Image (tube, rainbow, N blue to C red; front, side, top):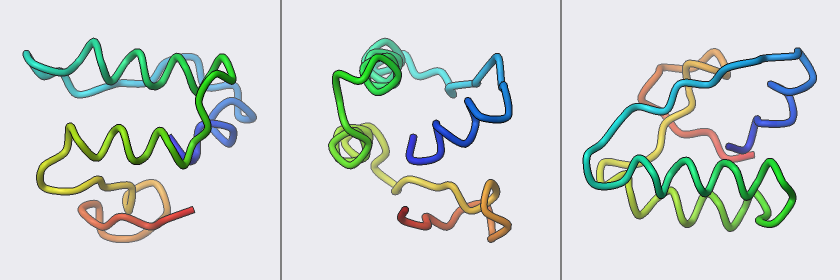
Length: 72
């Protein structure tokens, strides 16, 4: 979510959110709120963390091991 502007800048058209029976719709709502400007990225990370009991990861995107989380 913290790199969403970078993804928009490269004109990315699709983003895969790993499905979860319990939380996919909540996660999609968080992404949509960030995209619409109704939620800032820092708060979105906090909200998304609730749905990721093993921690968030974005390392693959930033050239680090995939399981790592690199804060913006």
